[in-house]
Image (cartoon, rainbow, N blue to C red; front, side, top):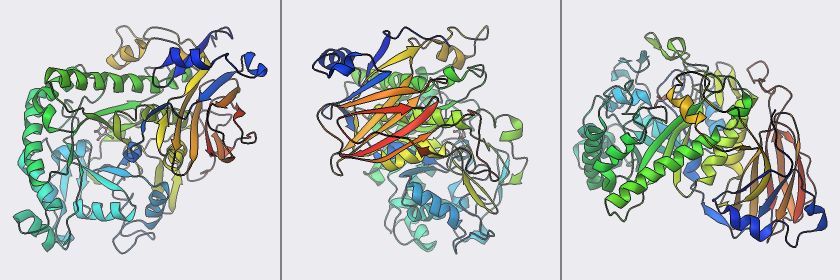
Length: 554
Ligand code: AHR
């Protein structure tokens, strides 16, 4: 592996104030031992903060796709079913995870979905063909069941609406059905269906990936922007409290990447609150299976966030607007194996096994890195959704006998449990490595070219941190990208001192390709990471290719 001389360190202040951090701390007034370069050094100054963490940054997603809904959250014939038909084991697992917001019902599914098919007496609901995934949709779960399920797991629903086969009218009628108290056609219908109180759904996605030719009802950006503006204005007229997210580019691989976003915002900037970002990552074509490249991919997420934010700000300037849009990264995950017609077409079956990606250790490490990136952009990204939650590219898998936790469950669960309060702007000094430059194919695919054009070396460590003033606790989330070497991380608490280490765990193992399964559900699970006594100056030994969490009381 190409490495650099010990003195060629990567210095990073997570909010970009690199010089200041380096000048004000490194080598000044530090104990003698620290003049010898340690493997890595982290300086934490509690006054240097990026932004308060929006709890919705750690959301997830459930689509009517494969076994996410049927056989995932809902399975009336299962031994686990409650009286609503929801699986109790899944309810308990999601409640324990404490996922704050969950997007629904799609995804590609939503662009052909008629919400009215999914309300009213279950026996009268039509069985229809979902053309997005070529699957039979029984409509036994619809908006009312979903909101009931969300309330049971203490999650906020984030509802996507059909901009594919429907007009804005259907979106507005769904909002009226869900949020108006009573006395109107659609609110009265909800009450007739047994839901007296409005659902008060606040967060709405105006369509899904409308830039993609694969999307039912795919349309040009300007047309979508006009439709989003129209829907948004009608929606706010009905309920001024709603938060509206327009469809941004489906990812940096799109030929219209950034241009789509700009044209959409040209039409609806003043009427929406946020724009969406999507991206899936994989260790195949783009990386050639090189894990050093793969574990650097969260830096592409950093870049995508910065680029979309720049387009938003460009439009703010052009429109002389006082509003700043926030970002909703409402689909992100590793997804590259369960792809192609076999994994994505349901052949007219009910709840077929689709997109059932099995995650290994290296996927979990990248997921940890991606969560770090999201946290570091907490000033701009307010909502993000790990796509998805159950059975479909998911941390939780079920069968008739129970469930198991995939490897990616653990970094996600740590962030949900320990990321609280405010994201810190950390000063990190660590060695960096070179990646073999240039794309692998000639000509390269759009996504490969995008990744290959990332400049700069890759720091071995990737760290995010939060501090919660209320509970007086702080947490570090540490990815060690070094595949071969453990690394000593010296943590210097500049103006605060931990009094107790509450939790110190690591996810690692000898085999980067190790997976969990129903037969071996505990092959990849967190272990205790040895840690020093709490003090203002602590050194942690991070195993090679690992992701760790350190949670302290201050
Ligand atoms: O999450 C799986 C699919 O990926 C979603 O339906 C779609 O929005 C994206 O392309």
